[in-house]
Length: 398
Ligand code: PMP
Image (cartoon, rainbow, N blue to C red):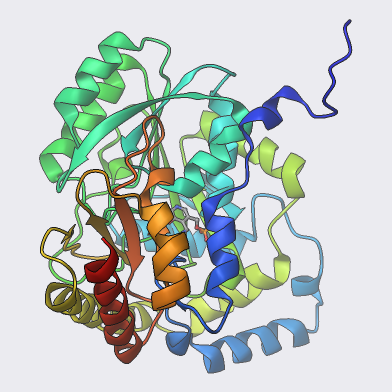
């Protein structure tokens, strides 16, 4: 066998530094007002309640919350998550739930489980940058399906499936997508399940923003419409409780869940027992949905504050989406505008404001004239101040 000049495995070719990593680093610089990371508002973290449940979990006389736990997760928390899912219209049994280290871990596992090197993953165009990062070690190809305000275009998906017979995994964020904020319409949800059945696809449904809805009722999850056990549903406590718990879950049919469970053992044995035990106590003692209602009201207001500041201060040629939930708006600049260069040369050094340039969210062909702007992390005053600074900077330099 010829020796490779590189010490790295071939799969590392697709594993590259990410804009997210660099931007999270920037967000930590107090001199920069960051609309970059997908951070929830830290002022709304239920600190006192969390302190209580962590204290009591640690004090548990059995010591169980400080012990190893079953790799699929604490049985009590699996049952609580099954009950949450069932109340949300997706009938779920405790044994259908696998507890994960954040839903991010489910992205990693799904690609490992289903995709051979060179096989195609179908994704939204644009899609969640963190998913592309998680899929990279599986060395996939991508087919990027156009999206609009109602999510993925099903005619385009149909055509792509006919042209891409090796595609077996479709990844979607159907509720308040990261980065665009778009929500997949009900007719398209039905059509997606129909196409998945006809083409033998597995659908990876990623829903961290599902409950951050500003108005109206939730649409049915893809999992609840799944007729053939083809949907892997991912949920997360990151946006509805706190990200630091690193607690997410997968719901899937037994053959898929069994394999995911094997990958869980291989990756990290189990999610933190203490975090699972404290979260389980939190769900037992406190009303998660009243906390979520507070978040919905606060983020709905922040979105309005941001969009009205954008209307006031941004050049007219810049358009932004008006999401009905989630944490982001997606800006589109005139053709030829380079959001990465503008961030580096103008927004950061002059306006002292950060956003995430859009290019990294496109799996196949980057369109640089976009940016993801977060409205949840900063206070309303800082949103007004940062959008004005960014708008003035755009007007001077665009
Ligand atoms: N999926 C999407 C669409 C996300 O936006 C995020 C986090 N920003 C994740 C998954 C990962 O979330 P976590 O691991 O914190 O549950």
